[in-house]
Image (cartoon, rainbow, N blue to C red):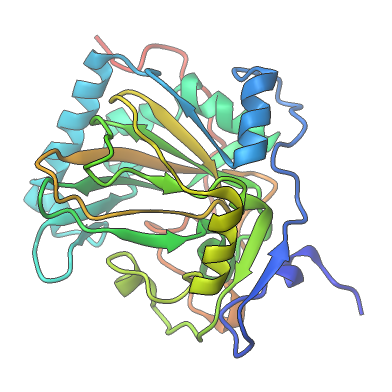
Amino acid sequence: MTVTMSDLYTSRTDRTAAIVSRQEPVVYPDPVGSQPLNKSQLREYEDNGFLLLPDLFNAQEVQALLGNVEAMSTDPGILSREEAVVEKGSQAVRSIFRVHELSELIARLVRDPRVLDVARQILGSEVYVHQSRANLKPGFTGKEFYWHSDFETWHIEDGMPQMRALSCSVLLTDNNVCNGPLMLVPGSHRQFISCTGQTPDNHYKESLRKQEYGVPDPISLRLLVDQGGIEAITAKAGSVIFFDCNTLHGSASNISPWPRANVFTVYNSMENCVGDPKQGLTPRPAHVATRGQFPVLTPLSGPLLES
């Protein structure tokens, strides 16, 4: 019997939880020729599974992006769409998906060379947007995102074959230790946690508010945290966090008065396009997971903000 690479990453079955070593590279050879990161930065990303680039966008750009996201979060036309996800028990906006198609400014952002070329360099290929969203965590009421590996979800529910994708989070507000910053487990990207429990069909409708399937078991999570620790990313607005698709991450509720917001883009290699979901699941809709016909991203030729 031939065992394919994707067979190694089974999850959400009747088997017990397990930890499987990653088989793919973290940083791929770069035939595209985009090299914004130096060797030290690439090594940090490869070792930890994430990289912070401070102050990548200036105050004017951040203000324009934040204003754009805030306008969408109060636009009745946007809020009535399936792309808008509200918190359980309230109408507070948690996320707005497919923002690179809903906003001309964010369509430019995902092609900005400051972020796009980093994705192309790390993934070693041309890329496309697998998913984009704006995340909002208002002061006092912003809810948590529990620990998870994005790849576990994308592999099982979207049919992403390999670990050849990354997430890019552009911070639109300051992230401090009090307002529920992104937390990551260094080194966890090298281990895949196979989770337990069968996935209900159309699970995304609930998981985008609170994920209950495809989350790591406490024993596996404790083991990886004992090995790598937890790093909370504190940084100024305009900074950008890149992290591997399999890096364990989450964030706590925001009970501080300071809101937190970001634009989150998933870049996937054109050599890693999604196939059929596992276990006969119905494919998630296009605003959550891009499939079918889609363009290769080309770098923006002008400034982010048009005069």
